[in-house]
Length: 282
Image (tube, rainbow, N blue to C red; front, side, top):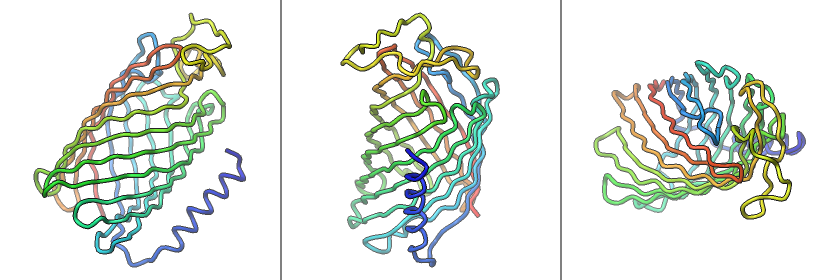
């Protein structure tokens, strides 16, 4: 993505935000999360885990549900620090306006583009990203819901090995079993590019492996990971569980645990990640 394209996309997002009405139930939110990842290097030959701490501040404008067509907006500033792999420490700012169409009491359809800038301590991984997501939500009675989504992401890093495009689709089933709480389980499939490590003993053929996709393209040595990193075409499968509860109108907590398998010509990188967090609404 060129700088000119980024400027145009940012201009579209800013224009959408300026055209939106100002009388809205917007609010500020801040929070912190502590989490883990069992394979931060995306290694296909084992991998090593790490702990991280994340803090964020956000301006959020949710849909009111009072009109058939509504709008949303979010601006999020966040930063994360890792216990051992400090090269992965990052900051990020994300802007995301959206439109929501209410299908009566049975569900909603939403379209949400986004723009993100993410500087990373390992500057090779610093990146601009843009894309969009379409969500469908159906409600069953008062407590249960089913959601489906499709998303596209185009991330352009300082070094091409860490750049990627990705198409993702997923489904989520959950419930609100008491006021101000939720619990849900979800599955996601994605196809695109990903960097992988642990491929030092794999010889690049240049002709492609399974499905004719190139193996070992954009191979570099990463001082942050202490090993070679290769860009590969991948298919990913994720299964996760999330839950949250509002302890008061202002204080809430969330938790998540996700298993993910990234399957490429170079091998399969498996990981389990999760976090627990607390937040405050102003």
